[in-house]
Amino acid sequence: MLRRLREDRSLQGLVLILPTLVFMVGLLIIPLMLTLVVSFGRRAPDGSVIYTFTLDNYLRLLGYERNCPSGAEVCFNPLYLQILWRSISLAFNTTVLVILLAYPLAYYIARAPSRWRTPLLFLVLVPMWTNFVIRVYAWMMLLRKEGVLNLILGWLANLFHIPFQPLEMLYTPGAVLVGMVYEFLPFMILPIYTSLEKIDLSMYEAAADLGANPWRTFLRVTLPLSVPGMVAGTILVFVPVMGTFVVSDLLGGRQVVLVGNLIQRQFLDARDAAFGSAASLVLMVLTLIVTYFYTRKFGFGEEIVAA
Amino acid sequence: MNPYQRSWIVRVATALVYFFLYAPIVVLILFAFNASRTNITFQGFILYGEKVVMEGSLVRASPCGPFHWFCDLARNREIMHAARNTLTIAFTSTLLSTIIGTMAALALQRYEFRLKTFSQISLYIPIVIPEIVMGIGILVLFTQLFSLLNTALGLTGDARLSLGLGTVTASHIAFSIPFVTLVVQARLHGFEKSYEEAAMDLGANEWVTFWRVTFPMILPGVLSGAMLAFTLSLDDFVITFFTTGPGATTLPIYVYGLLRRIITPQVNALSALWVSIVFILVFGIQRLQNRQT
Image (cartoon, rainbow over all chains, first blue to last red; front, side):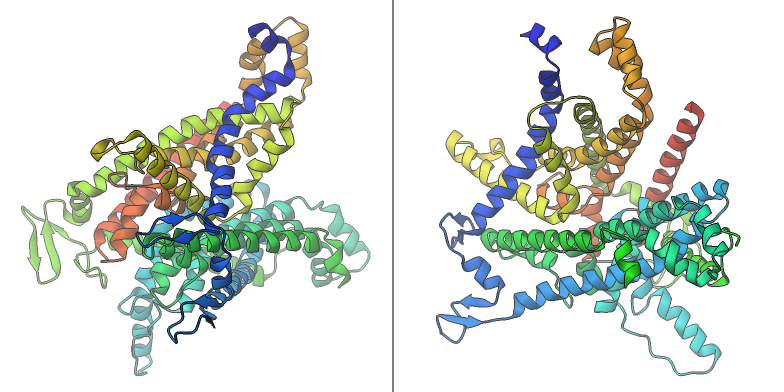
């Protein structure tokens, strides 16, 4: 046996990959399949799962509710569709804002003298090392009614003798958007920087020789060549925003319910693992579809230039 | 055209984005030294004194001076317990996921075997699906498995299997492995196979070749992989949230629970400590790595 291991390279490869496979199968593939099985089940009165085969949980997500308050067998309740739509549009808005903020910064760093690049990138990463939850807390402090932003606004208003009422900024959809942008901004800066840094400087000389002005050079050379970075960054931002529930929970209060909040509540408050599993799988499929089509569509830089 | 040329719009935008990134953290740390107990507005620093002196909601003097909330933090047993859990989980999962991930990177980069494509795909899944989906999956697995085992083996009371440090650590290992593998694979990709082949031609077996040739060359990759795994574990909220149980609270989970009820300068003190420790850690490792190469 030991001798075979010494000579057979394909067996050596299998031995090396084995622990990884144990973890990936045991804590990823089996759990996902089990989630699928549970999502076809039903909630028992004591909160455990009854294994059957019903599509009720998925129909409920699509708006077809059973046991309606009106007494009818089936009725239409768009609540969960609204939650899904809200999550997708928030993820979309976050991604757009993050690109707009990340691009100039990434551009600045990529065009800085090379010895400055590492420290400037380092500065982008430092805020990331504070904990995710702590970063949300920082925005709670800023946005509260008695918070720092209202304090500054009040002081400014006082300076110009304008009457001032503290603004309600925390627990609004806007607060959730700002929080999401703040959390995921560095994930966009790094890939855009990487793709900008790779651009051969002779490209610019060629563009200038051919008479392009800086703006035209940017639109025709820089922007298309940085598309792969933006695509990578979008996946790194869009996917986690779709599934996060901490930001909406702490900055949106009970006002902003996203898919993540829905799933979390099914498992912890409502104790309906079957419905929660269905919602979780729908979330997974949605993000996979979006990222698949997105990479298909924007995978090639030339397509954007043509438009 | 000078490629280094940057218009004033880019400069202003860059300055604003850096400000956006840092202002919240600066405020957070400043308020860790706040005299106000309710942490509403900044009421100045706390002065040194024999014992804690309070005026209304203000703390005027404390034996720890401006560091009052840090001393308060050290006396908070729940936080200390959570900190110990966080570090235990982070060190264990980093060690194991680094070893397992490095092995996987070697296998994928240097060997041909059955299940290779399957392994590669399974390693990509955690990167492209939302964390909560993986967390829910593991939660469903463990709750169903444990309830099955508890009934089958007739376990009662404390002997019952339940979510805790073990389940959290296992989950952290699972989500760190793909990232370690990616980083080490990139490093392995960077140098030619011929070094290893030369060693083998000179009579070294796989084992000796690995420790004498491959490992020293991929060590920077392994170290950055380990660092990534460590920060991922420290920072993780979602998967920990779903796989943790009684007695296994980590710092992020504790802070989250606290923030849903009250806002206290203790959290600011904790944040200030967290930022400085991680900063020193990362900076130190960076310096160490620079010296090696």
